[in-house]
Image 1 (cartoon, rainbow, N blue to C red):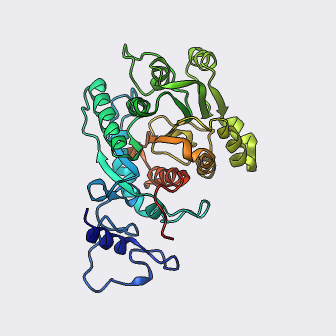
Image 2 (cartoon, helix red, strand yellow; image 1 turned 135 degrees about the vertical axis):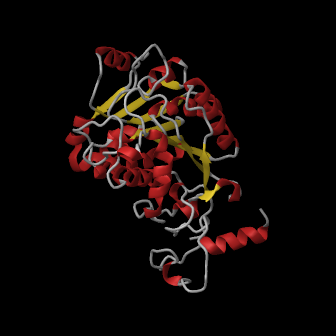
Length: 348
């Protein structure tokens, strides 16, 4: 990208801090025939992208790479999460440009890029895994922190494989209603309920460095045995409720134990109570509220510099009510980006 193009692009996207929120803020520009493009993060018109990020080919040296994984072939019960990336792109128009909790403007303090969706087979989970791992590896090779939008939870495994290839065995923070450590289903070893059993077996996880948050349903005793045998730390949904107003600070103390490790964060939207997130394939009541979910993600700021990959999965727009779940997931995605320390020098 030439210096002239870079200056032009920066001029388009820079907004005085005092400007009003909106398509063009207080700057006007609504009568002169201006066109809204993907390089204006204030837009609510135009081509939808994840967090209103620019398309990757337009970004010079992206530092955070957002991408979709439209795959639900690992789901044995209720499909629909293949439309998750599209749902989050459509919902991203509501996302702010500034996070007051961390005094960060993601579009200024990072070079966000939407890499699009992985081209993959909807018929073969093994072939899909090859595609997902390869796409993730290319984003990492670009020097960007990968953030995947699923898709069912089975897609986490190939993303972790690519991240592990770069960084070695990972510490994991896993937000979910389920442990996802079952074994085979219908004679197949890869599915959305076995992802972390496979990750442990493949050596992707550092022993004793796996923290699960929000768990409230075990399908059989074998799951509990696996979790205990592999020394997973489990914070149940009931545990979270007991933390009350100290939820965020209490989680920060637990997360700090993982400092110094390369950390992968995976967020299954069914972590959130079904009342707040109806657009999911495996709904579970008795979970955290949307407010509590956001507080949990904000707690990641204490390990932000150690995080080497994220995903958010299991959003199923066909099952949603007035885009409620997609909007919540887009906000969670925004918080994920916000807990990462600035990756470019801020001009603010």
